[in-house]
Length: 429
Image 1: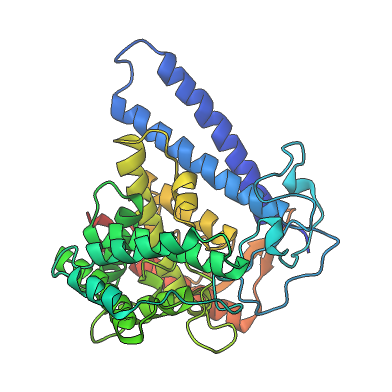
Image 2: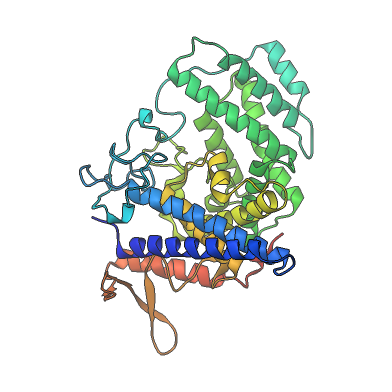
């Protein structure tokens, strides 16, 4: 199965957009002072930044096809990622190779020595837990506060203990991976719990949480956002104090996701959970294939929400950190900085939505209901959707006949219609 005509046209379109926007920006910057308003130049800069990032992601997806490798089995929990089959590395691809000219099929992922992330940081082998004696538990207990930033000092304490363990040169590979993952999570969790204004992770995650709650018409005030952040801190610290050891990353993330989506306390759903972007591959139970990503992908409503709220959060993060304070940051850099596990194709969709939302395109951050992954609706005389079609390379219309696919497209269409550019959630601060 080669690249679809839709994927090829997307890459070609993006290349033309990047070329045109680059030339336009050069013209604006070389014009006499005050010819163009500064905000207009910034808008072009932001659009070029997003389109470049989106093009890189799309080309990365395309380069990971390989005609000589078997397809990923149906139902594989990796969310549809592919390896490069040993020919083109994810971030080392030869620019002379045009991905849209390769004949390719989906391929199985390489081992981690090929620089492809494992399905999760833990849960794939045995590793030791960081243990705490009574004196250390008393120290941890003394660092737990209340309200905003209740667990910041406690997170810092755990983070320091993990860093100390990482200094041990005798750690096994499995243990080192686990502790490195815990070190990253504890550092970011502290920033988020403190609502650190200089932390991209905190700003992004809190935006996803707020967007997800408002998407569902739930309370989204700062007190609620902080309460949900404190909830995971409560679980992590409680586990250490009760069991005398730091939970594994799989246990931490599963507890984070399940507590946030608890309808009595968290009131979120998995598609609006702030950690989904980072920890797409983490298992949520002992059931094979039951990951964060599989729970989102299984339900059209959750999938559409996930793309929408993350797109708005990404756009808002770039606006805040790239344009106003840190000009060197780009959308792609923010994604990489968050250690995102989300598949490349979905990253591309999020970037696409972010651009649409910024530019005020139809559907905004919710996406165009009349173009869903290259599929377009057919309408009757009363504007009711009665079918779907795509186009081949000759632009011939091909009707969708798969009943389950039609059902999913119909559901996604109605979600995009109901949560479109005029819905209040898209104007959340």
